[in-house]
Image 1: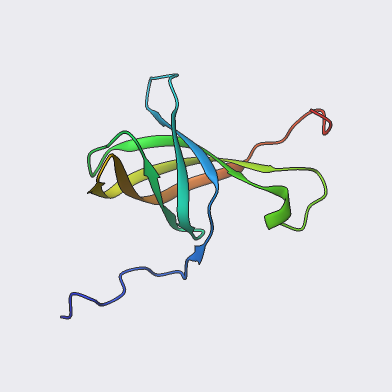
Image 2: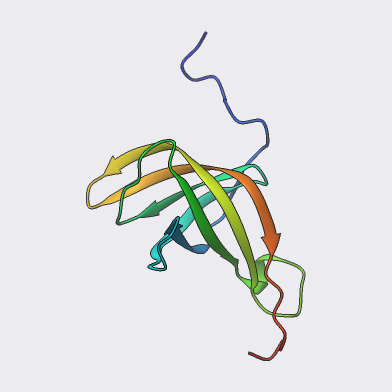
Length: 111
């Protein structure tokens, strides 16, 4: 089997979105940014590393100009599993599989 064979089931799009990663049981966010994204997972960079197999909560913000919604940014709550971690100078590349996600609805669209 070729090492360059694509492992992803769904095609990813190159999309930079801010995100906050949370270790389970911790309220302290770890800020990061996606590099690519699909409905099944994403690859992001952050200044903190994680372990493959670690389960995280994530708040992913898709900027309003990237989606056809006039209600502002779209926030998703994702439950993710870290599948790979790459050390990249002063930051880490983190591949995550999305196990579940839901839209975060705002009660006041002007906030």
